[in-house]
Every structure is written in structure tokens, then in C-alpha cells.
Length: 211
Image 1 (cartoon, rainbow, N blue to C red):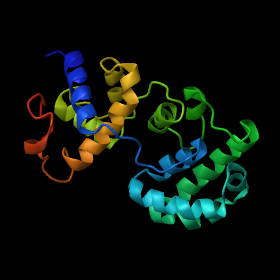
Image 2 (cartoon, rainbow, N blue to C red; image 1 turned 90 degrees about the vertical axis):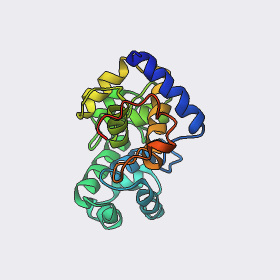
Image 3 (spheres, rainbow, N blue to C red; image 1 turned 120 degrees about the vertical axis):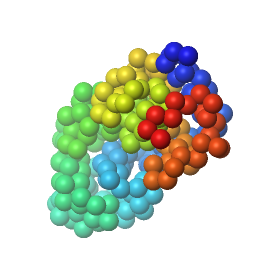
Image 4 (tube, one colour; image 1 turned 180 degrees about the vertical axis):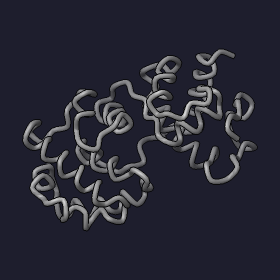
């Protein structure tokens, strides 16, 4: 089976297994997803979802966060870890949104990459979830699973994985496919325990790389 054929089969099976899979970060506005994805670095989405509630109680919009001192933000986001750098990035990012983009998140990948604390993974998440544009989010689940399945061959660098997947994943499927990998990676193809291959919908086509 070619990688292209394997990719299409994996996509279809995961669609059936996780038809409603979506982003596990809670947000109702684009700028909130930008904040949450920065906080999610080396932190669980579940914890981020709790912490941001407190953050938005005190700073309910872009302008309020832009006006806040990084130290004020840090006090609230500290439970997410790396509080100093995350607060600094959030503060700088919100100030740019307020001053340059009238409080809105830019609908341009390269513009997103220029925002403090925003890398390719975060920019792709915004492009896919907020603006419904083609996107591939290479988080730890995506990297682990695509290597195990055999969609990529021993590639660990996020950008290189992304570039390899662009060649075999239909653009319109990328964003949802990555969300389904997160769900599958948490429930079945786990990182901290041996993968539960016996209950995996991909068991008969999986390369089991890295197991």
C-alpha cells in the first residue's frame, strides 16, 4: 500500500471512530484560542481550560489583556507551567493584536508566525479551527502516531513531519485528521503505556513504528 493510499484509509477509519472529534481547548473567540494554545505548551488542555476561565474573568478581551502587566498575567497562568515566558508572550501578542490588528487575529499564516509565542503548530491550529483553511497540526500525538502507523518514516522534527504529511493528506482533511489523532493518541495509541493495539481500528494496517 502506498503512503497516499494508507493515509486515505487511516482518515476514513478515524472518521468513523471519532466522528465528532474537535479541538480539546475551550474557546469562543479566535484570540482566546491563541492564548490557550500558548498555555498548552507542556501542559494538559484540561488544565488550560480551567486556568483561562480565571484569566478571562479578570481580563475579558484583547484590550484588557494588552493593558495588563505580564506579572499580573503570570500570577494567573502559573499553574500551566513556564508562567514567566508564557505571560510575557501573551502580553506581547495581545498588544500587537490591539495596536496593529484592531483586536482581531490575522487570517494569514505568515502574519501569525510573527506574533510572539506563535510557532507553526499554533498557526496551523488557528488557520484550521478558526478560519477553516487547510492545516496540519504536528503536536506530539500527530508525530508519534504518524510514525507508528507508517505515514512518515522515523521523522521527529515537527516541521519535517508537517511537510511530509502535506504530500499525502488531502488539504481539506488535514485539520480534522490531526484532531482525530489527538483523540486516538489519548484513548488507544498511548504514549506512556504500551499502545492498546487489540482495540485499535487501524491494527491491521498499522506499521507499528516506534512500538
